[in-house]
Image 1: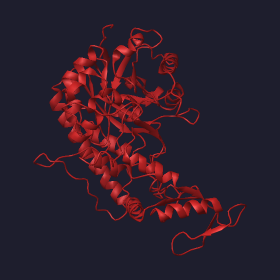
Image 2 (image 1 turned 90 degrees about the vertical axis):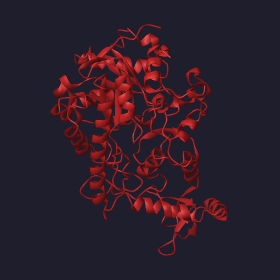
Image 3 (image 1 turned 120 degrees about the horizontal axis):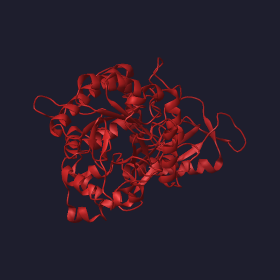
Image 4 (image 1 turned 180 degrees about the vertical axis):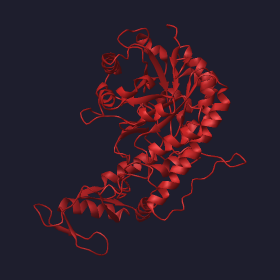
Length: 465
């Protein structure tokens, strides 16, 4: 394989190997600090990161506010304190080697005050910020204020063009690189547009070449592109190296750092990764963000699938075939179903799915009574972890609501990610994963259940494998 050439990123020459940031509490100071110490770019998550008490134990994020807005303010305070703690830990472990970045999601609740609060409290420890999940127009201005580089995450040349023309052209010197995230293969939330088929992945190379051409129009020929999503062995991408159509290129690894000694995920999660097979990763649209997301097809996902399948349309009046009266709850006016749907409802009820919940799309989903109680409790306990949430109908605006009915077909993403990142059941929690995670079971590097250190992994990746 061609030798990897170092690049200057965030003010220092580094290996073009970047750790992908994964929240909540998955990309930590321990993993990112070790990655930077190995000569690459380590990335910790600034999304509701953990903080620690005097004994070094994780401080539980327990909310006491009576209103969503009060709990939202608590969430911001937790996130800032946790992000500073992770930056400090990463800074100490890195020993001044490599570079340290923080990853934030623009669509997370309180993105701007959290980003500014962490950068203020960890001055000199963070060298760059990566930001996606939305259109982060203001991230460039914030990064410039603190004298660090910014790395927008995009999935198309068109998205970068919009960011550049609206905001980034005013802050060109701070642009450290552009992260191209494959919307079909990357883990977590994916940037698929309405014009793209989630079931038909596209070759990333023409899309990256189009991004480079767009960047070249703006005089950004020397600005690196970071390829993210679907990267396992760099040898698979050898034709990208020294390719003038691609230009300066670095590679981001989000999934492989999960299986290291420094990775904070549970042993059960690590063992599960070693058993995955091709096709076990599911691209779905259950997320309360409204984005597609990529996760392991476990019991948690299966329950969401089944919930949406137990769904029928209703009308408020007798219209067309909707002639069968059906009472939702114990009070209020009945709705009307078709006779075929009424038969389906009776079958679901006989199986115990007796509770009908309304959705924003004039449909009913049928769930177990205990599931209905859990959904209502989670919606009531919302702390505004997103800028807008389909599940709870929270929105980061004066009204504190999206104006739409809460959607019981989704879930509380804060709850399930906190659960799995703090030793929760890996089958009953959302397990984000890139689509290449099945390669853990096939890659000889992990034979016999070997779990490397971050240093060993970075050294291995640098060889091409």
